[in-house]
Amino acid sequence: MATRILRDLTGADEAAAAIRVRGLTRVFGDHVVLDGLDLTVAPGEFVALLGRSGSGKSTLLRILGGFDDEVSGEVLAARRRAVVFQEPRLLPWTRALGNVVLGLPGADVDRRGRAALAEVGLAGRERSWPVTLSGGEAQRVALARALVREPDLVMLDEPFGALDALTRIRMHALLQELCRRHRPAVLFVTHDVDEAILLADRVLVLTDGRLSLDVPVGLPTPRPRAHPAFAALRARLLTELGVRDLAEAAT
Ligand SMILES: Nc1ncnc2c1ncn2[C@@H]1O[C@H](COP(=O)(O)OP(=O)(O)OP(=O)(O)O)[C@@H](O)[C@H]1O
Image (cartoon, rainbow, N blue to C red; front, side):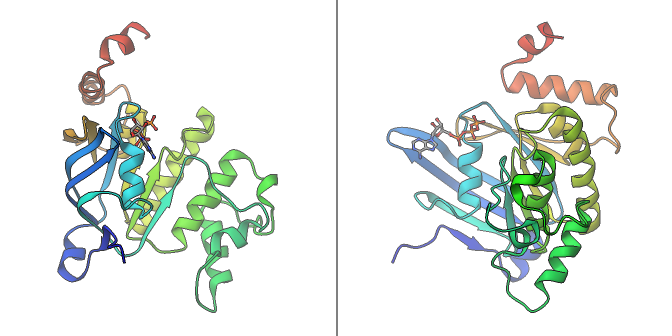
């Protein structure tokens, strides 16, 4: 039987970290996408992961989600974990509540599912079919589906990338509120440097299969974009991503 690469953190290790990755390597043919990557995320910490297109962000998340085992290295994650993707990935033949509680054991799953939907602002929409939900509402259901599992670790792969700018602002506020209330560790993959600085305690940049930058945000919340420290960190991240000149020429 194949050994699963992703293992649960247990005991004292789980109290010390939500993710612990050591020497993670993933190769597709002769393309080395992850090259001995090390990553630790502490319990309750919000970490944003940036990287150029094709740098391996989704590959890393797939491995941490348990969807890819063809790797070498050590990959440990909190036992209770959930993944949210860019598309909500709702099953069309079951209603909002059914999607939230799908596969959950226990007698009171409906009550928990309703509570999770209420937390994401969808009280009263339990019986809505996925096709009747807006993009933002569908992503709220996806957040509720993660939340109802009471995760210690939530991993999100560009969760708001497909939403319009106004909806994205609302979703940022919702995610911040949920994190404040439940304190999971978060690994948040995004293309958007400002989104990373707005939300995260720490920002990572993935380059050539490793973390080329690992920087604490160190700004008070809320984080005004006009703050000089915000602008300085943005410039540093854009430089690391190799697009600072292009970004400045465009503004
Ligand atoms: N199943 C696969 N077979 C072959 N190559 C793959 C496979 N999955 C990913 N890759 C390659 O691995 C690299 C990293 O892909 P990945 O999707 O992880 O990048 P990403 O940083 O998430 O990109 P984006 O920001 O554009 O979503 C890319 O070059 C991609 O073509």
